[in-house]
Image 1 (tube, one colour):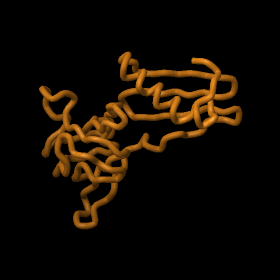
Image 2 (cartoon, helix red, strand yellow):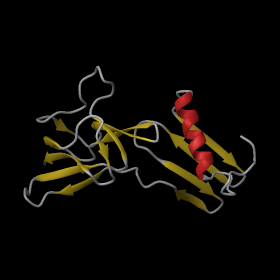
Image 3 (cartoon, one colour):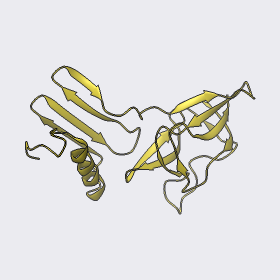
Image 4 (cartoon, one colour):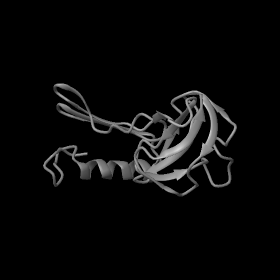
Length: 156
């Protein structure tokens, strides 16, 4: 990658980041880590999504979608909702011919992958973030989801 700037005037601007994300997918890469003088960018595929940039003054988060959101249910004191951390398409299984990550009745731990949310052609595995039992699934394969849309209801 050369030292040239994108249309925004930044070495690591949005257009450049999108191009890097396309390269991740095209070449089936898991990670790109680049540094230019005092700036650094690291993009990862899979797992918990995180995009960050490094400046001379330290780490600057470029995406806050790294954590799964859970919220207590008001109508059931022992229930929590796992919400989508990003806008995208919901998938309940790793591939169409494979079983769902979780189903109603399954017990999950914080690191248990419960689904995938595809955003900008990146498939992001979403962990439960909390221990509990799946009591309801609110979305179906291929459904569009927004940030904070409830995906699952868990009894804790």
